Image (cartoon, rainbow over all chains, first blue to last red; front, side, top):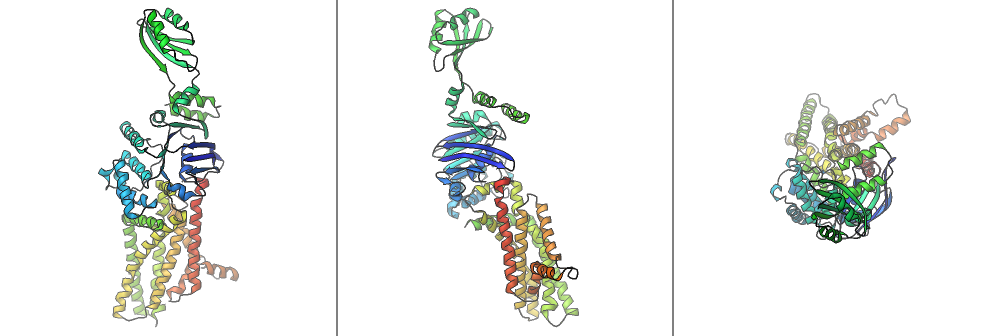
Length: 326
Length: 246
């Protein structure tokens, strides 16, 4: 649905993104992940046709966003990072205007606006001025605005930023509901958001794509070994010794003991599931098994490991990374 | 036509805010007052012809008021959208930059016509008491429309350069006043230069209309002036490709 080939964007001497390539298939939800200033918004603006790339090309359903811009833009609904909508219009009037701008006739635009309001639960505020609405509602008007004109691609730039936790939950539910047959690209610097909503993740840092994969694959690729977290009630040293003796175990790390319970992280060869053998071992010694679970890397850990693999360039870059983990 | 969708939204923005009504009121009060005082002047000291004795002054005065008011009408057209960030969304809709420029121009122009129409009340009432030839007055209004279009095109361009409305208005005043004063030191300038300057002076071009003379050269000049500034505006929107969205 979307093909980006070697996008580079420069503003004067500043290069916002370098050589960004990816492909998004029809019906996918793809998460764009990176710290503030990584180049997410620049990439998304290029996709939405706000400005052309300095180099490279983007096609939306075969239409080049630069040379065939009007047709490409007609397929895309865009939600900007800074939700900027006319504050002096009512919600209904504004959405009708947007639908008309997307090429619908006036009666069709009215119907379309009503549908967009319904899918974003905006009916109760339909005739209020946008300037009088709360931030959460304004964000929703922003989403509704992207939805008008039945776009097949949605590009959402940080749709949950600046919302309170309840509104964030609402917004995520709304986005998941939008999916249907649409292709969605969603940017965020909140990792759990990507984990919760996306099929694939594009990790971008300092204007370059670091990784592009499903959250599960990223997890597998970046994890050095399979790891299992184990808690056993029993004599710590003996437990560790017994576990180490299990075939396939590469390393055992102890996390301490409390009240006769010892916690261990057991690493095994990759793709080898030792949970059943471990359980049997513990049971055969007569110890009590309290916890046994596989450890997966969170996206946060994946992200940090990718970013730290990149050579540091300056102190300020470092700051943004720290920003993200906060 | 998306041009008209944009135009309608702009008009909605104008008439939805009280600033538009203030501008309208000031324009009408001043042009009404000038018409009244010009009429008194004509009655007391008047010459023999209405064209040079009355209408000329009426339209020259109205020109002043238009110059005062129109930069305040055009200042928000792009500057406000840049400030709010709404330009960014506008650029993602399937609409050509040219349609955006023309839609906004048309909206300001319609607003200007809405200011101009009530000023016809004075001449209309006058006509009931004193029959006069209507054609010179129509020529004057045509001149006003052309001059106003030039002001608007210039203001629109300046507005596309900044996100600050005060800057937008002030720079427009600067350009318009320069065009006004450019031929004032006739004696000091070289003859060749003066001919050139007279050629581009908005106000010298306008002068013929105020006396009821429609010269196609003048009409063509205003049309070119407007086209030139609309083109510059269109180019200015394209600069987002290297200067970003703001």
